[in-house]
Image (tube, helix red, strand yellow):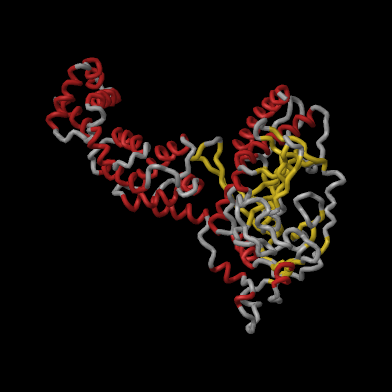
Length: 549
């Protein structure tokens, strides 16, 4: 295992080097070994997003994360004999309700909403299919999905990423969305290696999923990660999915292949069930490098399913796809076509509460992340790259806007304190914005003290460090307790400035000779003498006045 890990780390280093080179050029051609043709990596994604709904796709069973095993399973979820799916339940009999699964309208509306947000064409008539495969956590032996005519097709997703990890240099790219389909989730298999057994939890079986199929328009892990993060933000903004990857609400399958320029696409491998954006980037880059190395050494790429081992930082084989990918798709015989309407096609005599109106959903779409970023830049005058950081961190936009509302400081200065100071504290301690011990009210109070020139920026950073301890003190209380107020007595400051000048003859001579940069050293010495309690602007004025005398 250790030897394998050492081999993986070498591949991993080269993967990062090539991924960075790919990103820096903005293209997708990677250099091969000396004398060999370059390589073109191709990456496509299939993203499974769990729909945010109180009940499952075809049953009334509750959807709840981390519920006791097999506590949220109906007869239909367990695929007991005689249970059937349907679009609507026409019987009030209790037994009939238990045996018949009813299509969840909320799931349909969430899929339509997502399709519209991703610039898709919504199919007014979509079909359900059966996808057959045997696995212990799929009790029916098939999954109800939409393979032939899905609910949404032909969309696009624009996303942005940094060039050479520089936030000030960003490029926008677009990936095509092939389709969005409604389908059932499977249960969950829990492998107990110590007892050599597998336990099955069907709580997740039948939960509504949206599968978003992205065309192979990406070329590296960073692009794949940026696209998924943008999709995650869109889903959360819409409320169609909570998209919490740690809870399995957003899972990614990455299809990766490489080929020489001008040739057909190479044999692809599928890296399944990636549950972290960071792991997605690593898995894709590793797989690209693994395939290139395998081909350059005379090997072949198998059409196989692989998994990403986050501990080793590599992909490992799961099962060979050759001969095992015939899912025997067939139309779902128990479900009629799913019919949607728009304003023009909606019959006048139909009950609007019993249909899904595409136009009605479209009119109620919220501002998407791209629009929110533009508004942040326009309203607050911040840099575009800052707007990306605000939206990428859950709750940070609201935190920033709350601080701006409660402080006299300009938004351009506020953003610096939030991104450079508060966010670094949060990342250092692995905390979310919601978990921050420094509330927006406390930070606003601190920035008001700084804006009123009652404390220096150095003292403000000291106060922020004290606030981080979460002892319940206000910024003003900390300032008084630590005696961090700015010195208001100008005569006292003049005496300190004069003492610094008298002790720095060489620096004074350099300044008088025209080297004005040395003045910053004198300002720093005054700041040290006053323990950060002097206003640097005033100190500079006093020093310049005395040096000109």
